[in-house]
Structures are given as structure tokens and as C-alpha cells.
View 1: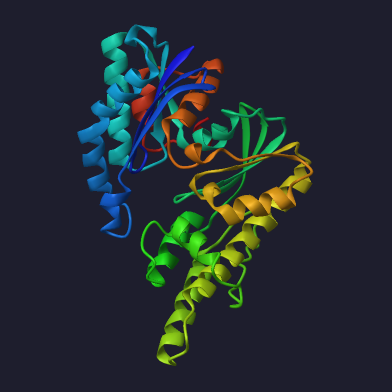
View 2: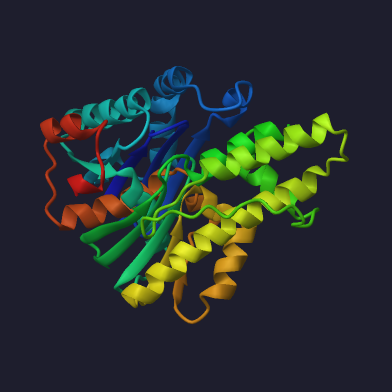
Length: 333
């Protein structure tokens, strides 16, 4: 089955063409990072305007690069949530219009499922599995009994891990996006500052706001007392606390549910320290980490998730997609 997939949940405009979501014929991703860097974060209105401006161009590039005809396409898969409402609406509207004009079925895909199955593009999942999904907007632990049966084990109670990286990078004057900058800076330093490892009473849940505040308070205190500030040590110490919390909760889930596969997914899964840590700590099970091209938001992962949802006979009517595009959660699956 040839699938055209669309992803516009945040600030990447992406369209991909694939066969069953496995053989990727094209995966065009137009990033807006340079634009939003000026503001230190994604501005929703600017993001949606740029999606509107470039979405047709990305459609054309994806189809041309895949070397197919429009009549070859069997299914359209589009992210319908969660995400920025304006950004989502651009992608959903474009997918529905394209489907209507060319008599192609359209299926709405949960963005988080896309991230989870990004690792399934190049690898096979041996169920049951646990997925740690870490991104700018999400920090979730998900149990998967099979491709179609999911259970949310834990979520962040405040900031997502990617959001926390961005905020700490801003505190330290490192710029945006914070994740790759701090990851790079941490390699130059040592973890010699005892930042707290957040603990939550609820099992498997996460919290990062206290850690962010601890970094801010320490930084401001050092400035007031004229202490020598080593930004690399700050980055290394902060990242060490983040990784300890992610590892602790994930280990508990893997051991309790006795899973065969652990999936590390989402934009923060591109973090080199996190990838290395998980490879060392989970060498005894099937660890799946998507290649870098599929870590951040992209349409290829939506194509794979869309294909699996279509096999489940998920609804493909326009009313369902429009109704759920801004509120889609795992409870909708």
C-alpha cells in the first residue's frame, strides 16, 4: 500500500511517501527552527502561517522525490493531534482537500503513536513492549501489549523533558533549541553540581519543574556571590539529573511488566547521552531507538502508524478527523 503522510503538529512541515510505512520513498521535512530561534521557542501563530505558506511545496517535493503518480497513492495519513491547534489544522485541511480532490481515503493519526512506531520503520517490535516517549511536549511511559493495545503508565506532571532543556538552556544563555546545545556542552564538563533528581509519589510519573528551579536558583546565587560559573559543568550536572529520573522510571516499568522490547522515541531520543545510557543499561532486551532522521517530528513515522491504524479498521471519514484533530490523546485510540 502506497501511503502519503502529513505531519504539522508543531513547527515542522513534513510530507512522506512510503510503502506500508516501512519502505520510505521520500520524507521531506521543512524546519522552522531558524525562525523561532529569534523568539527562544515556538510561536504558534508564526508556525501555522509558515505551514500554510509551504505545505503545497512540501507535498509536491515529496511526490516528485518518490517518483510516483498521484493515482498510485492508496491512503493518506495525517497527524490530527495532539499539537498546536493552528498547525494541526493546516495539515489536516491539506490532507482532506488532497484526499477529496483525488478520491483517496484519509486517516487521522495520533502524533504520539507516530513517535512510538518511528522505531518500527527499520526494526521489528517483539511484544510486549514499553516505550519511553521524550520530546518537547511529552514525557510518557507507555506499555504496549501489541500494535493496537496500549496503556499509559506515567506522564510528566509539569514540564516535558524537552521543554525543560529549552528553559535551562535559556537560563544558561545557550540559545534555542536547548536539547542539542546542552547535550553538546555537557560533554565538555563534569557533573559536579548536586542538582536534585525529582521524585514523584505516583508510580512512573515524571516531574521536571523542581529541577529547572534548582538550576535557576543555583545560577542566580552564583552570580550574586561572584562565584566562577562553568556552563559546561552546569549542563553536565543538569543532564545527569534528567537522565537518572528517566532511567529509574523506565527500569521499573521494564522489570515490572517483563517486556521483550524497550522503545526510546521522540525528539529527545536524539540526545547522545540518553542513547548511550540506554544501550548500556538495557543490553539484555530488544532496545529500539529510531535513527536520527525519525527522532524529531517527521511524516514517515505518521505513515507507519497510519498503516497500522488502517489495518485496525480505524475510521477514515472526514467528520471524525476534524472532530478529533485538536484533542486526540491515547484515550481516543
